[in-house]
Image (cartoon, rainbow, N blue to C red; front, side, top):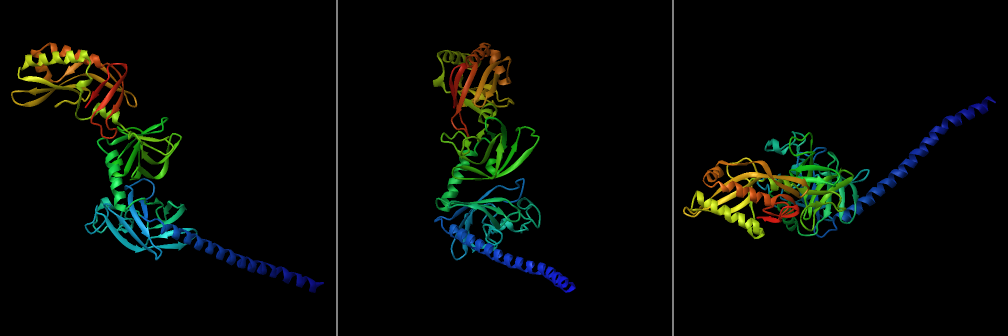
Length: 443
């Protein structure tokens, strides 16, 4: 009996050893299978990388969290021999090439990790300056700190891919980097992006970001580092988002939300009035309606839009001007800011000195302009008209001048749907009356 117990005990003691050995054998089998799967995946990715005839646009971002730098358009052409040719014209290029189109070739590899990793870890003049931990010129504006550089990555975990797009994540700093198949020669793509930048980052530098349920303000689009806040003046909080220009609009590094709408990429609308997401829910609009009220200059009335009443008033104003100085004549009437004044909500008169062959601006501020809603502006006279000293000199000798100006303002009293001649860089607008007033055009 004791002999049997000893045998049973020996059997039980051996069982864990036998079980453990089997487990290791299974692990080896499955590890080998996983390795083969990674190799097969890498082969698929390699075939995808070398496929596009024009290579890839690399929408490259650095860092993690708040954007310290703008996004960058780089270019990459991979071949089957594991060589990659990269190109760009960004401001970080070295050896006197900053801002100049530059190409450089290096080696790439696909690492065998838990998933496919694209490694661009040999020096490349186009990419490596973002990764270099120390700026050789010791320029603080180009690095976050010694040892971190710009927090750029050159190893990228491939998150998802298809024939035209590869979404990657920086292995160290986790910025999202996108490869999109380039549809044209690289220099043509750069030109198209530059043209888009000129089109949407013009005179006006502030924007509405809205989904029609919530609105935020954006600044800094032209620099590729966008500040987002709840209001333009004295914002409580200002978040930074990095973006790149595309031939069709702009794209942010990561997807974000406003209201109930997601956004990442915006395209210029067909009428060039706004930037919209593919689903049309989120929009970026310039604050052109505020600009029409506060710009530092004058938009003049187009005389061809004057009503008969306005033409009569303008003729009488010109008569009053000659009472002050017979050599003067009324050149134009406009809305905006006159010389030497602080307000932009004014009716501005420009006079021509026929004797001296010069023109001199005189202005009167007895107008209130207010935004009713986006693109809708109300105009009304003030209860206490005010005017500058230049106009006061004329009014002292031509007392009917102020009365006539008040009459002219009264013809404008109403609400208008305003259509600028350019939504991003307006130099005029048509005011279509929808409640009172008379339709007019500024130029």
